[in-house]
Length: 253
Image 1 (cartoon, rainbow, N blue to C red):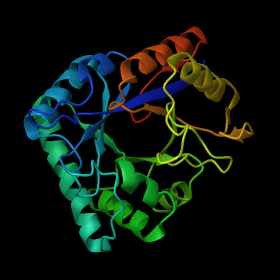
Image 2 (image 1 turned 90 degrees about the vertical axis):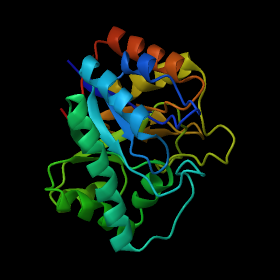
Image 3 (image 1 turned 90 degrees about the horizontal axis):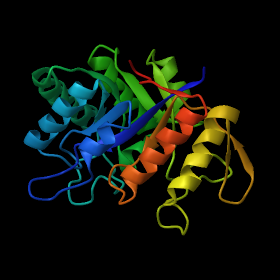
């Protein structure tokens, strides 16, 4: 039986500002990328999400970011390596403390937004994130953009890699995500997204934005929790993969 992990970005509400429907998403995904307070999330809300994830037996990942609450972590930042390493250690440590209180554990790291896209190709910042994981013992897996140079860098450092594809994002022919500034970058039709993910898991291919066929191998599929269509898309993907005989299982364990 084929298997794949379904993940989503959760714990992103901040005070009175609500983001996404964590309870609904946790009923559909096998892994949760939980905000660590740098791009979104407050301690009480993060703890609530972790407790809900623990009840659902959903795997927990540290969704680390640039220090960018105002920009939701989607603005590029030129940060010294030592500062970035310390920032990532700080965020993982905070989430680990809250996870312990919730009766669960952090098993992987997934960078968020601009940091995720930057370290996919920027070696210096990638090495800073890898250094943070190594400093914490090196046992946490790193979720990376499938087909990116970061995969090899992490493996060379002895870090377990989880390759990721995005359900609700369009791809370039080169295998990178189409910029959110471009039309068609974000996909909103649940049935279209579900069909694409069945294609990906069963054939190892995906249709790029120009209609060409892209070869892609991924252990995990992400659905952004902040999208207005998130629950509908996650439900459609969950049902389509299940009908196709695919087991939804946490990649990090």
